Length: 159
Image 1 (cartoon, rainbow, N blue to C red):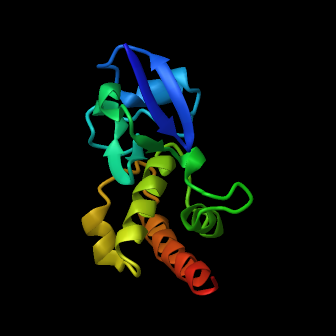
Image 2: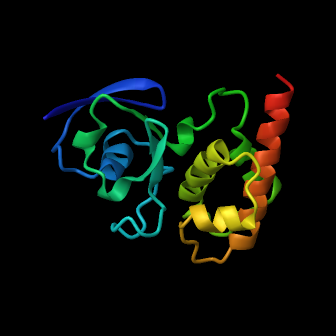
């Protein structure tokens, strides 16, 4: 079945089984490797990406539901190729990753959170981000999300 959608601002048309999880279409068909497979059950968040601006776990999202929608992966998070998204910048500044495997999903969840809450505190972050990091980098992740919100506010106020 032909399925059309946009990914990171580019239109795509694919002939795939409509029940295929979007994760595998993104990784195997479109060769965008930031989105990771973690658990396959929508629990860990490694496969998180945005669909029409909302956060979804793509391992259990059939590609047929992406028809006509805008999908954003970590590769397309920054709207400006010359400038990092505030979350990407904060992740680097705070040296968050240890192994890094789960980080793309965390970053996509963090980007959605700072869109919804301008100045998230630790409780906001814990209540809204349920991704799992087996390396235990949660303290750095929390610090980076707060930093990303500050970077976003500084960029917004300078415009």
